[in-house]
Image 1 (spheres, rainbow, N blue to C red):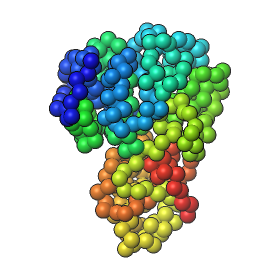
Image 2: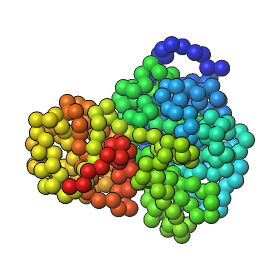
Image 3: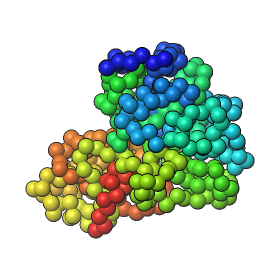
Image 4: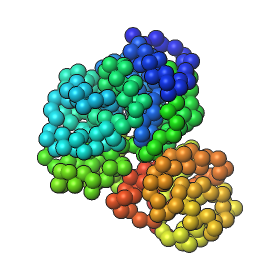
Length: 343
């Protein structure tokens, strides 16, 4: 049983202290751990008290499903009741890695994990520290992003500490996350897989293995408040700094002219490197416009730094939506609360 405290003493653990992290998790604690995508806030997938503590620490709505993480492929039998053939093909190609698959859950997984659904999201991470902690704990771990719900996801130890110090038992320092965006989430509940959240593994990557894949409309559109969702990041406003964000789609000069026209109104720019020579307002760059890898790695930290611009509104630049940049667009449009301006 987890001990209830008004304020926790959050332990800062090194990457060598995986045993201590596992010890805390076995005792019902919650620990922020590094993965290749973002830092996750981990707890035993079978401990309902610890799972509830995650929702409390994050301020996360209880109907927002959690992803269960495993340390080896054999562990899948402890999470799902069925492992479809297409899921096996994708696992062979992309696991361990930044791919989450939704499958029918088995009876060991409590309703608190799945938001009451009969399905469960599962990931086999590529990060050595994450896998070691899961293995030493001896059970699958839930691990949503280790941040306050709705804020930009954490890609560094300092992001976790800024959001959750005193609210969680420990955080393990694994350095900066290599990918920087959360995993691709694919529903395997029907014959044709459906992408519910885009990530590093693209629709083309998945098609190359299983032939056909659908893309859920909620990736680009705001779902209704009453709509039941299968995946994290589909329903609620996500990834947002404290400063309001608006998304601006257009070419470099048109974007710069639009933002510059509001000089004196305390605005800032979240921009590409190529925009900087034309801007006359405070700015934060999240990478070169043609380098989606650097943009993905930098985006969440740039969103956090946007709060340091001293602006009342920050205008985030985006150019076009294609298969390579769909994950970035998905994160930005949600950070902006679907406020989009075309110039």
